[in-house]
Image (cartoon, rainbow, N blue to C red; front, side, top):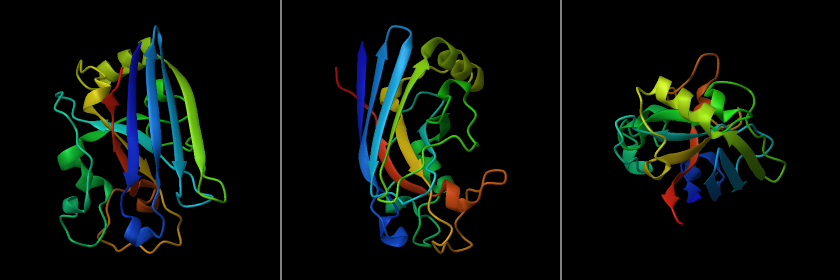
Length: 185
């Protein structure tokens, strides 16, 4: 068994009016990966995308901070996280092993900004799809970070905030919290 944890800390809190935070527990046991996330103080009544991010070449990813706000608009948007965190890799949605990033199957926070996410993922399928997508890269969870995304449409974002994906706006993809995954067993 392999056990990983991440302390999820706020990102962009000063601008969005909430300081999303929480924790993640990831356990590889036999043929499955069990993922548990618990988040507090996220934007209420909103869907929140969350993902593993990392570098396909195996370099360790780090969490973004306000230092990554390269255009100095007061927000760290999705493209600005790439320099330290790499690319979006695995969605923490209804079916992580399918690796279908843009979709509507992510958790929705309650009226208090709380949500919990638990999923048991078939490791063999996830690993195969991960390797196919990232040129035989390994999952290497301890080299990844977790991002939580999403603000409500009433949050004012400047035109300089980037990161729209397909028909999903920057409100959906704006990072609101991040945590470094560390092996603890």
